[in-house]
Image (cartoon, rainbow, N blue to C red; front, side):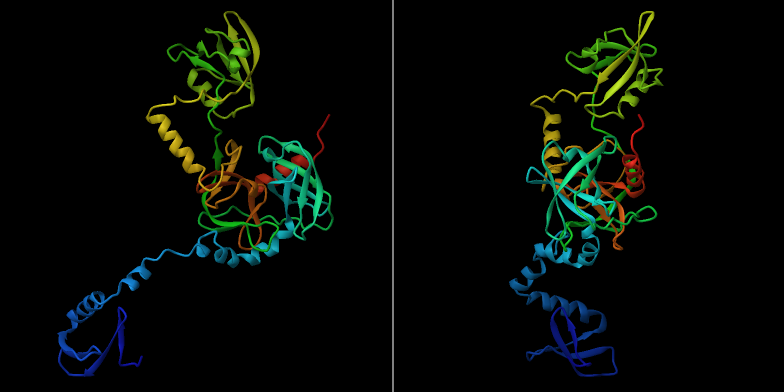
Length: 376
């Protein structure tokens, strides 16, 4: 195309003769000519071009993006290969009885690594390294509060992960490396670090909100309070040593505990005070019919698209959220920035477009506690 030609909507137009007036004489390449004003020129040519636009061109304009170029597509992941190559020797892949269950983050060249505790059940634990070798591993200690486990990989020369300084920024790219040159997944930080409350769990009481204090109105049969011997009319005075003065305070205090945890209650019955250990239990299943049930099923199905949520996907003191689509077994490994520094440790796949990572500073504190021998 020469300097005297212009291309509008795929149609080549060439001025035939320039005139000093406000009109231009154009030849459209197939024997027709027309004289139009400056302002109507572009509109006319666009309409002309669109009228001759073939169906094939229209289909090409609306063609879907190739799956290879999706966020986790092959071509997209290949762009982030330099980050993965720089960190793959700081990651191991964990197998339990021959089935991959998690990644782990190397924290010491002697073979110490940190991973997601709730994925490491009883059984034979082995690790796959970046060099393709499979080695044995042992679980040493567990931090139940943060769902972390310290493991010992029986291999030498591993490269400890480097931790990033400073808090991550919402909108920044993050990479989940594995033991391969291509990363497992990439995403973007969507929410800064915050507390992730556990799913609702109950001690199994109905409270009398009309009376003063946290007074039990009714006991739910089969729940923790029932098994601990609590009765209607009892008044709960404290939870794990923290005083509660009214029912609302009790509800708020119990909201921080997850299913399976045991809370220590201080209870008053008439003139007597006593302690009770009560296990938190999940609420009864919803009714099989009704709008609420259908809504819950839809939300649950949405969260399970692509992969099941992690067994424990909530109840973290602090976690940052990113939109990386992780598989369950891809938790436990580092979440790194484009410099290859870990901004956190992937701890849960929470939903269809939500994954959680424990922030780097929290993980480092937890590692220090796990490596410190318990005092007897």
